[in-house]
Image 1 (cartoon, helix red, strand yellow):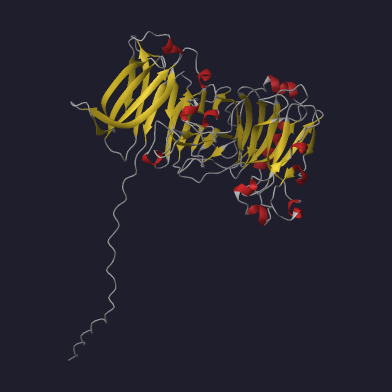
Image 2 (image 1 turned 60 degrees about the horizontal axis):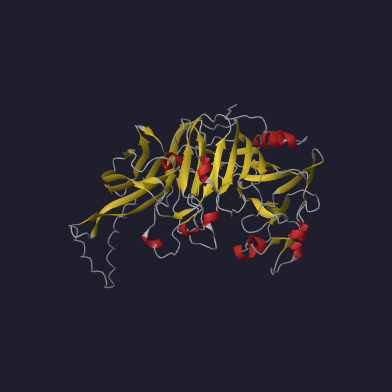
Length: 539
């Protein structure tokens, strides 16, 4: 048996435990892994299978039919209806009275179908596609959605004053090429009915896919920041090329660090759910990697042992960074993964996928153990997820971090004071944080800097930035071969010791121009073919 991390249940879980536990779900997952995989089967009639998104959104839960509305608990549940790609029902159970289990049966009367026209009998054999958790997080007596579980093994969580952004997943399998990605599904849930005094919700989930099964326990704690404690037992049906633990999925279209010409016509200065990957390594190094919308799929790996944390963060909370009243990117949370116990050797993998607009999630990050994932193994791991808008609180009190990164065309100042583009790339990196705010402006700081061989550094300067009580690093670089990647790293140091996180930046490659097409073949002549000469007579 391969063991990544095995922990006792947190005190909160023990306090609410019943005769039904993660062990029960693990027994099911283990037994399921020993049998051949059976894919979910659609039961949707055409009117639901062919439904457009706008029509699917018309199907809304009725507030007078929320689960637990009469139980005195601060939590409520409502459900997603099947439709579109959500074509197979998910079984949802309630745990009550110290361990009894009952299925929450599908009932079309829980939903308002709006102006959709269909035969009501067509819904009788359908089911739920997922569910939402509601809690009075923003106002007493007002039940706001704080967690959503819908589709494959995806889930989203928000705290007070936040709006949905990036997603978590139960498991990622072969997300990175060359293999085809596999999307495990949560097939069944068990939800512990909370008592009136409870301020946590316990959810169990059974995961299934061609290569793996899994038993999951989620403990949701609402608050200014939402906290989700995750414990999982994974059983491998088959060998897995790349196993992704604690995966996060987000969207990055553009921002100050990467804004292409096609974005200049958009009034919004930035569009993204997350703008960087943050890492806290086992050796106490902090790393910040700004995200890109690359021209081709890009995969980056950060090798380490026993990571202390990683996540996709949304740094920059001013509304003026986004200017979007509809989508409110300034209110979308960051997600920080805090591993529990030692995860051993492995790497955080970042995958960036080209996208033309903000409707596609194009960013994935997860932990990939070095130990190969082999058929028959059982893996156990646990972690805490923080869904927060207070990114500085994730750092050590005495640290400094990257506030923002700007990328633009480089230029030279001519004798006539007119600036002239010189074909270089200009990067400006602002560092801020307690480690810098306490220093006098004339403090002698240096930069620990490195760049890959594809970059020629033309200029490097460090300047105090009084607007943020921090420092600005200015870099002007020439990319030698635009079809190849450029990697750079920089950290502020004092007396030879780093006092900030490491800025890890990538200039993605531009695909080489396609080879010119071959000239078209000459058009066939419409004239009659010439008469072939008569063969010579035989002697």
